[in-house]
Image (cartoon, rainbow, N blue to C red; front, top):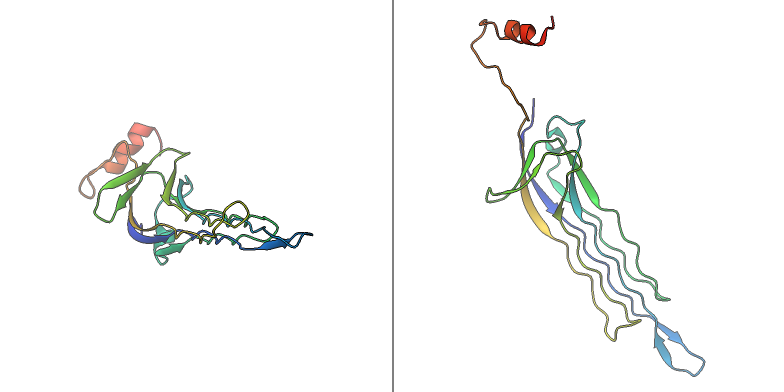
Length: 172
């Protein structure tokens, strides 16, 4: 069975919080020393020519990207998570929940940002106040697979479609 239309729910990763740490100086003064958080992971869509339908989305409809890591003391930034990449066959249309076309995934190198990750929180090293990471984008999209054909042979059974195809391609 070819799966050609599927609705999926995407949740991008939340950004990491900034760290509030202090360094004790020899004079007894506390110096702000907390690092920034990292951004949340985004969700990308990429064309894969080895796929011929959307069957990998048949049972899994919700995709959640990883959250960003919190900042660390000693002015260390949190580690950025890897983006979540979803593979689709060429000829896939990306539609929003209303039905408008957002992107047509046709070429081999097509990469499209579906949901962007949340922004990173600021630590107290260069900033006076701490900030929390921002939430990632939440989005519902419909993936609509259209088989990219140049020619189609249509007809009733036993009318010679296969014979015509074999004659035109010189194959048996």
